[in-house]
Length: 376
Image (cartoon, rainbow, N blue to C red; front, side, top):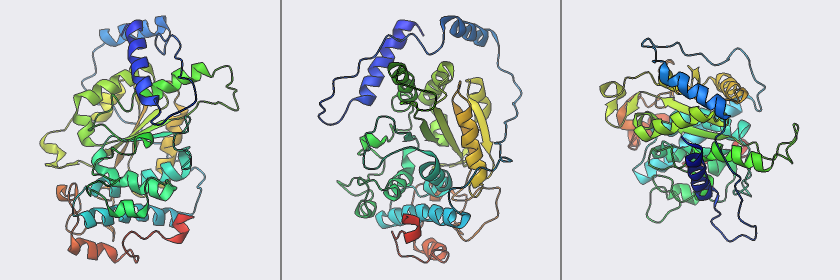
């Protein structure tokens, strides 16, 4: 991509992503000249080497996350599990009340979502427009009850209990695909290019603007962009184009979680999608980590995020196995829908009264209840 094209695209996208939704007394942001994130010689050398080399036919081994390094936990395991189950049941209850929705992804991604919001991400519920907040993007927007539950538990006024109860209802702030909470970042239909890519790119631009004020121990601009991708996102061409550009630009502040559950609304992904996603992302210039236990491997998830943040010169894809809601590598438990585990029917429909009664045996609270220790 030519320098002038990079400048035009970057400015256009950045102005769209950073424009305030309300009146402001601050002057508009002035974007300096931009000619790519890498030096001309470096970029040219990389481009030539990529075009002249053919990708290997054999599949490359995927590195497992550094699970041997146990990170310091912020809470005890029992409370972590209780918090994760709260996220799951808020999602289940909302979908059940609406008799419509996608409970599968929120159930499978709850552990990762909890660790991100409770232990990793920087944000301020009282100032949702804070320019240096970490961004959370749900590319797989059909699983939006995960995002609504996380925002509710994090203390955002935009998602209260009554909003969860009005999920997918006409005129509610919690539609079936998140489009109302613009400042919190939602999704464009399974697409990364417009919503996601400008964010880590904007970090580089903002950092250059504030560089004279940044200090090694106190950087003004240092936020990350976290993304959840599903199998549907990986099937789309526009997503691959965006990920290719992110790898080319070396956007080290972009960390994506790939929910590799092998289930689509049509059935098992074996019917249409069997490529090696990890190999493709490595070829695109991403750092790839594999979390094998996406359900209860809390330390493995923490270690993967720490490893991803240590990689400064390329984006990271963290692939984790999940099912609805447990990994296929785990034995069934009280939280697995007994008749719908690993079934596409739980991907896009309510569990039903029979499944719900079975599941509630392990959850003694009324619908939409948040335990006091989880609130704290």
